[in-house]
Image (cartoon, rainbow, N blue to C red):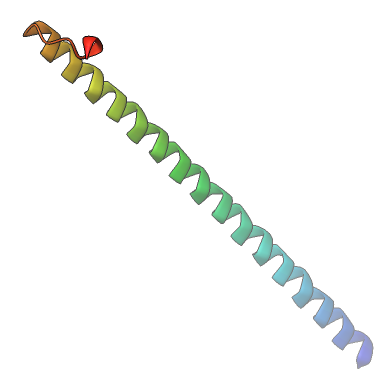
Length: 66
């Protein structure tokens, strides 16, 4: 009957809303992972740069004076 149809439609709407919420949560988690990876890349790049400066300094080359 109509009441059952309305109940079924409401159930479907609730399930769709839950799916949308789940997808949004997944998107947020993926964005956080991307941000974390970018942070790690930046930290590694900085470490590599500092290592290079240290190697050059050990050879008597100081880029800070340039």
